[in-house]
Length: 542
Image (cartoon, rainbow, N blue to C red; front, side, top):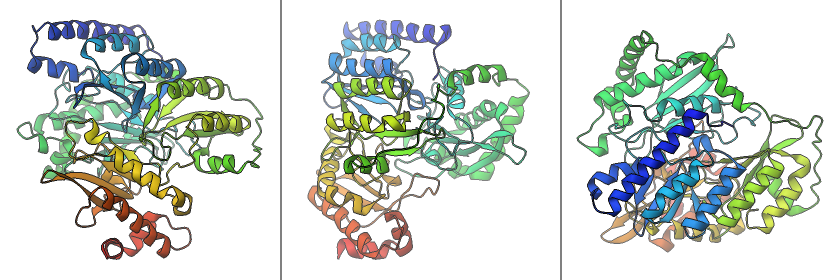
């Protein structure tokens, strides 16, 4: 994984000192909240319902054990003993005191971490495939390209105050595991017929109030022009994006209103100009970054044999491990979704335990997933049973990857000032109600948001739930048919909303109907697409 050089460390240390002075002035009253707000947001510090919330950046979801351990220690020292892993591959702390924030940033800086640009109208944390560098199906490891984007975008003077926040994702597989087409810019690293590496650009996706799927505006940009093309996309947006209406300020609105062809024409025109300015980082810099992402020292001839005699382990093996490119190894997914638990939450002790397991079994590496789980990317198959036993003993052994209990949920009205309804209790109730049917149902991705901002990705759920306010009462809309994968689609609202108990009943009716109607090999999403909304709507509403 990438290691800071002297410039990275100097930048992060300088930001800590700068923010410490800003907090001091805010606490003594010399810096008013109106002036302090944009400063704290650029350092990932939000003022939520009950306390400050700090969002820590985890670039493209990659961590080492020292960093993970520090996250556990921060949870104990400055929060209430837990952290919340997010859909942006970050971690949030919900009970931060303002006076502690600079010390937290200093602790993070000591392990090459920060909270820079995790909020504000700037380019946010760049996400990637959580299996990058380990997956058997990738063209190349996408993380060096994500790291190049991180370095280009951090403190970019032209893009520090965009019309609205901006999100990018980078993948290198036809299997999209990062919701790439639901980003402002999604980049797929591809090979052309000549075997050359390039970048396919998808621009104008997003969820929130107006969900849209990004169209492909250029199927192959030479890899040594990727940053220049990214800059062209952002320049057109920065030039014409709406600043008078925050609901129409995202790039998806600009692409929609200009039209894909006109937006692409302007990008290509800007791109041609930028090519004359020689702004692309030299290939030597990309090669320097790539050197940080070489394969670990895999054991030659490691056995592929696994003893499956323990049924609990066999189930976890089938559900929570993924094929690795290296014989004798597997990708292991640690579920942060126990039955009745809070999706994405982990205690300080669990965070430190996962750090220890990464050091012992996964070459000192972990990944945060956009589905709010943790990955150990390089585990010997011979070690999987021992690993599972430790996970099971510590509340981390749920065998539910991509099942109905593997729920994505935002913090909702329990914490967030923007939320209209609670997400956490709904997730807990559905998890408990559906636990007995989880394995029978099979793959089903359920996502819950507490407001239209869609931090829980409800538009992209096979089943999505959106919490809204109906005359002061929490109400839950049910959506069906979404997907964040390569077959990207947006869920559609079934009809009138439900109260807290009613939405759980509606989910059960939808899944019962699926079980009664599915054909061999069909997922919930396949059956829904075959039968259509009217059939499911009749089953749900009667």
